[in-house]
Image (tube, rainbow, N blue to C red; front, top):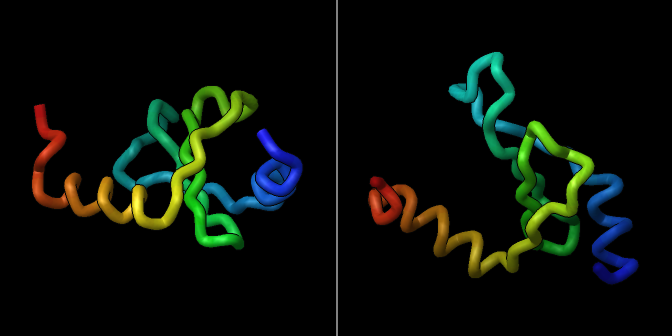
Length: 71
């Protein structure tokens, strides 16, 4: 991970879905100040998160809304 990304993740404000419940078994997302989006496991926040470009994140959200990832 490059130094800029590390700094952006240090100050990121993470949030999780309100439907995730009390168990904590969900993912958290954080918009980064450079437009990218961080994604991490809420049960293991110390692990390195995934970081996505705005276009990749938008495609994922769009696909999710359309049900493309439903099992």
